[in-house]
Length: 514
Ligand code: HEM
Image 1 (cartoon, rainbow, N blue to C red):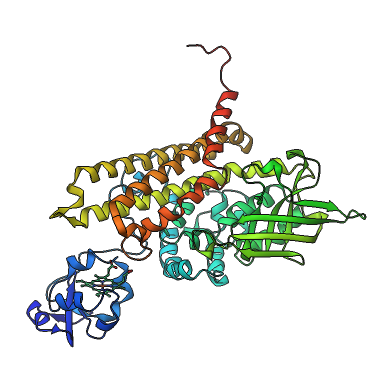
Image 2 (cartoon, rainbow, N blue to C red):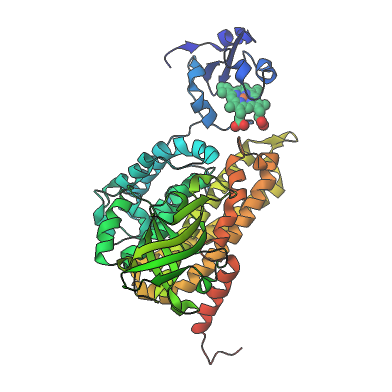
């Protein structure tokens, strides 16, 4: 924008057929846009020839200016825009980022985490965010190229923890070496994906099924299976999901009914049954499926890798977020599966499922708390910029109290989460199961209660905007509509709270007395 104009000159373009305005020192010629303006013509004519910065920001999100940048014709003489939102930048709004990224000291992060976060944030903001709204609104299968870009960038591999699988992709974000990679890198990857705030369906469509689907294959699958599917899935060429829940069994996994019966020649299983709420199932190539191969209860459960093949059908489910997540109702009708596709040992599927759960729950905590943090940032910004009864909202003690509660709760989850993540970096899998299963369950319960409280307060701060899908409240609207997913998936709040206390009871000293 090389042209500049005096404010006097702008003020002469003050009619419907010649309408200029100034927003943050940028001059816009809105003459052609006037009839198409979603807010109507009248409001624009009222500010024709004037500085409308305050009016604009009280009604629109900043990104509207980017979308309609073609109407910008120059700058006001001697002025520069002050309101900045750079892609990939760390927010300066208090509590909008984890304390470490805002200057606080932390024993957990090092240079490689800083570089990793910067690279992932930039990738998410420049490669994924531009498509987010469209997918969120229209649903549908996410373009393979987008998923492949994630795979090639190393973002998919980064979302399932440290391990040999990291060597199956050409590189990791910011050139982090597989040997340097730890659970803090992974936590950052989940948090950055969760920043796709107003598009939770799109964000889940980009790999929520993968994060829980591939680990059982890597940990328990036979070598041939890993060789065949892991590289293709990690590069984003194929898609995988985890198929456990059924219309009959949710958190009550031991009661699944989907059956796998061996053929007389012992070479195949024949699978029959249904699965429900399968994230990414609608477009998955592989289903890591819990099946009943034995008697009742958990000792009759096995895990099978089922390829999309004859007899496998997926139907899109209508959920409270976008169909871009590919949440599916899956039916298996006499599906023939080679016995080589068994993951782990027959009738020993329950430990495979359990193996996955702690990691899944920890991932859900990372994502939901980052989502709550985004809601805090949105609410803080809004409370400062919104003027009501003649003064900014933030000057109302009741609003400051709500923000205080939101901040304190999000930080409490974050600090516990980082402590658990640190322990994960220091413990073997066996130690993690023994010592972290309880705390992870309790924190999952706590993090979704916090999401509930944060969302509730944010809705009150934003008012009607929080129940409007587009515009200023879009992030809060999406959060209040979808945070419940996290409080159910991976084990419901009630089951988590109960599990946490039951695990604690195991080490309760028999001699303890008041
Ligand atoms: C570059 C300048 C502008 C552009 C590109 C623009 C574009 C838009 C868009 C896309 C929407 C729909 C927003 C959504 O629901 O997501 C909208 C709504 C609206 N705009 Fe603008 N606008 C501009 C300037 C202004 C100004 C200066 C005013 C007032 C002085 C204004 C008043 C409104 C109003 C009242 C609405 C409806 C808001 C609501 O539903 O709560 N616009 N505008």
